[in-house]
Amino acid sequence: MVNSHGRFVWYELMATDVEAAKAFYADVVGWGAQDASMPGFAYSVFSIGDAPVAGLMNLPEDARRAGVTPHWMGYVGVDDVDAAVARIQRLGGAVYVPPTDVPNVSRFSVVADPQMATLALVKGLKPGLAQAAELNASGRVGWHELLAADWEKAFAFYGELFGWEKAEAHAGAMGAYQQFSAAGETIGGIFTKPPTLPLPFWLYYFNVGDIEAAAKRVEAGGGEIHYGPMVVPGGAWIVHCTDPQGAIFGLLDRRRRPIGYFIPRDPSDAPGR
Image (cartoon, one colour):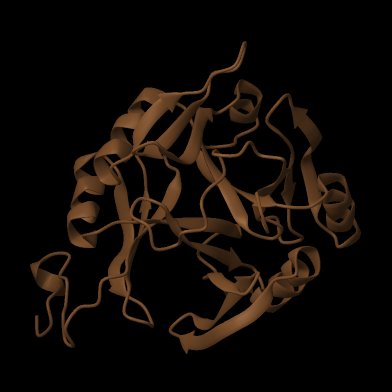
């Protein structure tokens, strides 16, 4: 994992029905699934062709009893997991899973920032397993977005932790949207979440070639569309969704449309209605 410090290198879906999750994401995003289980631990890998994209596992029973629901989690590469965890604690964050070794795979920790958005840290992910740094590639994770309680405080935390730097910024209906870069590449954005959302969280966008068709597949598969399709600055189109088990994710279509292009969700949404 060359130059992986501060970059998202892996993603995992924790689900209550892994077979149903495989079928849903195969239809919506086009992922295949390969078994990667170890003794006593069932695990699958979503893939595009032979290229791994993300992991899939059962939501642990103790987590279910604690009220944790299916969710996506991103892993950020770090040079030293233990040092990064200590820094998180000094900066006011929390540690849910202390630094732990996965034999012959990695050392990782599950943490939360001071506003309680969860993510994982990892070092030593096996070559060939880490997410390639190809934000535009079909079926890959193309964008990382933090819906924070306070975007400025959140950015200060992640800048101190990972060395992220400010990139382009713009103002929209929901206030300031600050993009951030790692190792010189813009990989995501941070903004202050609407008050209707109870908790801060990280949202991961999967690249699709036709967002209208993908949104229809989400709904046909039992998922739900919460926002979009909607154009964002730069001309890309996005959708916010939940899968049938309640895990939140985004879809991203980077194709530019003609000026004035509009995607009606239903006839009453069309301009002039």
